[in-house]
Image (tube, rainbow, N blue to C red):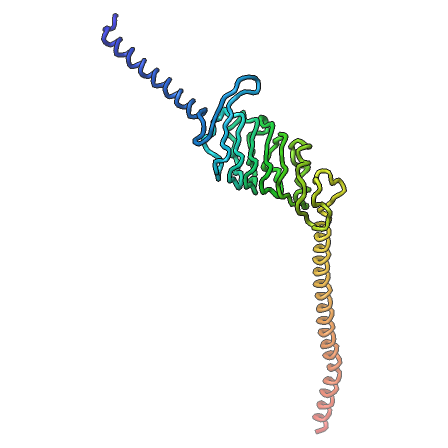
Length: 266
């Protein structure tokens, strides 16, 4: 049975329009995913180390842009006003190899700040910010070479215990130079923290913990002694009363016998 030519023509037109719409939607989604963020400048380079570069330098940004293309390999956010990096800030950038966050006001790297970058990130610049300590949970396995210089690092027990859990390139950690320390007389100021092998900033904390334990134990010991003293005194008082009661029993019995004798005589 042959189909009418008009029906075939209409069916072909509808299919062509649907296919055309699908192509346009695909192109739009691809453009949205790979187009440059507003106010930033993007460029593409060829070769083995090519890919998209996005520069958002010196734009007075106070937060990470939300429309960064997911094929970005180099991202420059330097010379802005960023104060913190929230969790999952770069989670959708699986190709990101270089990240420049220098010359901002960063004081906080939240846990998960660099989540998703462990496999791709090769260089991380955090220099010239306001960082005082590092949280290993912010990096989640990132092993990139890093620039950590120019921050007001506060070297204390917290930073010392964080070092073994950081996977950053070890040479990068030499950029952590103590500006302040706790205790203040530890001699850590002006010293690269990684190179201060004999420096133990947890000694004061350990001593404080030991003192607290001694005070607690003394408090419990005092309570036990006080209870024992109270218990002994209370039992002594009961014993004394009981003894007096026992001593009073014969005299009462004697008086009773004397009264009985007088009654018999009468």
